[in-house]
Amino acid sequence: MFYACDNLPGIDERGKSVKKRPLHPTIVLAPMATAFFLGGVAGVVGGFSALLLLFLGVLAGVGWLALQTIFLYQLWVLAQASDLKIKKPTPGKAIGFWFIPFFGLYWTFILWMNLAKHMNHMTSGCKKVPVKLVIIGCGLFIASVFVSPNQGPYMDVLAGFFVDLLSIAGVVVLLICNFYFYETAADICGPPGTSTSGKKPVT
Image 1 (cartoon, rainbow, N blue to C red):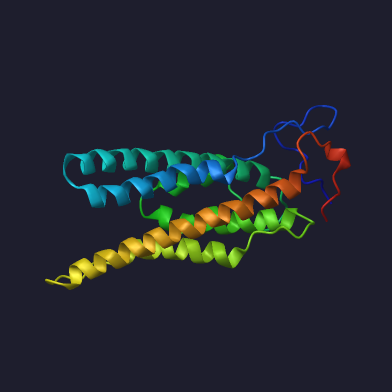
Image 2 (tube, rainbow, N blue to C red):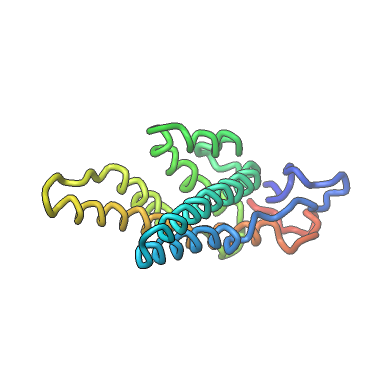
């Protein structure tokens, strides 16, 4: 038996929770939505304006990646209290291994799926992360990497569109999963300022 928020950074000597919650998913979503919007507008206007919009869209995409990384890191800090007997890397390793070429494709499942399982194990409430949805999101995103466009006068365009569709679908599903992760984290930690002594123990 353990308290879900025990032994985590931000717990003072009196046992009161003072740690920060993860970023709200809408903050993570905003730059990606901006990137999609700018990319769509760029496809309409054309010319130099399109190049400028695409550049701004790339910057927004980088912003999304940074915020998504911070969000996942914060969740893995919380997951360190889990005693579930599956792979549980430290927050630094969980994020760092994601950026290793090729190996990061496999690690995507560890990063997201194991995180969902650890957090579901920690909560005694009904707000759990749908693991199957997480797996679908990871699978769609990774599938877009392995689908190679067919060579030909027509099929290369169609295949390229299919790859883009897989990638976008994977990102959208994982963005949806962010909200489930946040709700589960909120259920584990309770309202801001809640004492860990006031939390129900997780068995």
